[in-house]
Length: 379
Image (tube, rainbow, N blue to C red; front, top):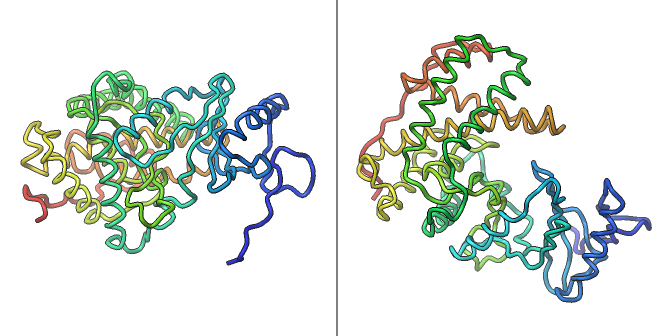
């Protein structure tokens, strides 16, 4: 490793050489950013000549990194005609209230869509996961559960948008609209449409019945950060602007049925059981025997996960076909596998399984046995 970092020059200036130059589609937005940055630089001890690209996400947001006198900061570039930053600001405040390691909003120009944030570092939980050794990652996942439980512990109704039937239904519609019709080029028959309508209605009914908490909605290793200092036990939490008030089963399903890596059933169950053991003591899942019977809770997690898998398959197709981001659709087979695994275990979902097998050109009758579930947790 080099003993000194590469030279950093002004991402705004036109002089060469330039390190990670920032490209602007509109000169006027470039000028607005330069003016905003100059205005806040002195107050926060920023060094404008060090601004550089940090990352971009699946939306229209992108992120820059900039150095200060003793630390670095992150700048969010979120064009206001494409991104509403108000939810981000609201949820960031809630996460601070919950004691989570989440970026604080240090400066925000709402009209321009520029925001200065704490820098939680470069390394995500995903970066340090050992995908070939599930048990080696247990400690990381327990820290993720710490963050999840803290987030859910401050839940209050009517604070965040409701994860209601209308929103869940809109999300499910992404699967036929984008994955089936746009990606697979499929025109649904009357019978196929009826089957999907019936299946989706059942999925909605199951998931809407679950107890409600704050839902991050994309709680997974790519959005969890390794702390910058060894003395910090908390994982950082990012990408929370779409948080809602909805089923308690959602975020644990998102964590363990990841968009970008897959775990064997044993490890998924172990972490989920540990989560269940924690929340059953809080009273949050005193519902239809969930707190006494892990099997009942697990089945609810699977139904919630199914909704997410169908949604994400549609989103990944849309990101590729509409937004020109093909890397996402490359992970769609992972979600088809998740969908098939869950559908194979419930009689109400067998028509969906047969349909997916037909669409994907796969053999029916896959043997994905239902895991043995006891009612007792770990000691």
